[in-house]
Structures are given as structure tokens and as C-alpha cells.
Length: 82
Image 1 (cartoon, one colour):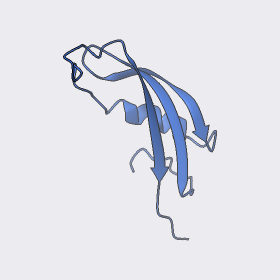
Image 2 (tube, rainbow, N blue to C red):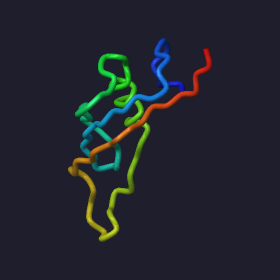
Image 3 (cartoon, rainbow, N blue to C red):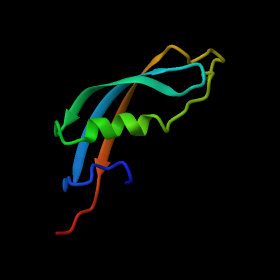
Image 4 (cartoon, one colour):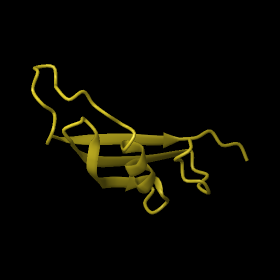
């Protein structure tokens, strides 16, 4: 909730970002592919949120994840009572 855009009183927003995975398993170079509703701060909040994520550096087959792109869907929800 600390990243939820402060003045927005929507119940739901959806953002899809595409990120590159670095050698430490962290998400980097993220860009927004879709944002609904647009221009309300959810895209920027999703980019900030993605910086908190980290994957294992090897996948299930033991291969490095570094350099792979990942599609990150995020649904922002809040319960709001006027």
C-alpha cells in the first residue's frame, strides 16, 4: 500500500510491465506495456514495486535467468469506503 498512488480512489487498476532479469535475479529495465486506467500513477508505482522483486538466479533446469525478459502483470486493489 505504500506504493499505491496517494490521491487515487479507484478500487482496481491493472498494469502489465516487461522487465529484464539481471545476473542477481533482480528486475531491471522495466517498461510499461499496458496501464488501465492510464496516467493515474499506477505504471510508475509498478516500476517501483518491481524493484523489490528478485528471482532465483537459475531456473528449474539449472540455467541462468539473467538476460531473460519477464512479463509482470500487476493488479492494484484497495478497499475504499467514502
